[in-house]
Length: 205
Image 1 (spheres, rainbow, N blue to C red):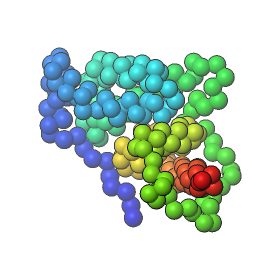
Image 2 (image 1 turned 90 degrees about the vertical axis):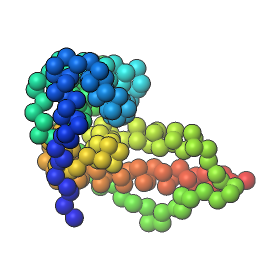
Image 3 (image 1 turned 45 degrees about the horizontal axis):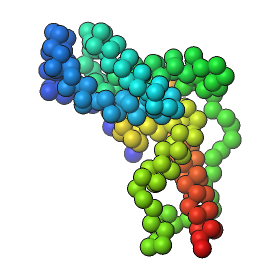
Image 4 (image 1 turned 120 degrees about the vertical axis):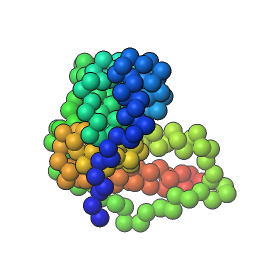
């Protein structure tokens, strides 16, 4: 099944952008409120920590406001924002000494991720119910452990629900590369979670 094409900017959003270009701060603040949570999540997944993500969030909207005239309205406004956020986050990573992941375009290792032959049943039974906060922590940790180029694709496609075309354009890679990275991200996450829940059953009293 082919992915849907990038969605154009909506009429309401276009009105907000036009008003913001005319220095209407109330209109720009509405755009910020609409997308700040998504930009922040994307920044956290790339930088790996909240302080840097906060800085990326601020810089992203500052640059967006400064360069609103460069937004052509041919794609969703969030796609344009996300490109700014990714660039800002990567700049943060490049400034860290000893940071191995500085590019979304680095080559992928040749090793294939594989699914376990017998995938554990992840549904908790009455004796194994997990608090929502703990499950969220497990999921966040598993996503954060993915290589940068995998977790960024996972964030854009599976969390932000961008199309394959939008993600490819955003990251400057081909659509087959997006599909390959997304598949490997999903496989790695599934393996990590399967091992985690299997280990919890092993220590069951």
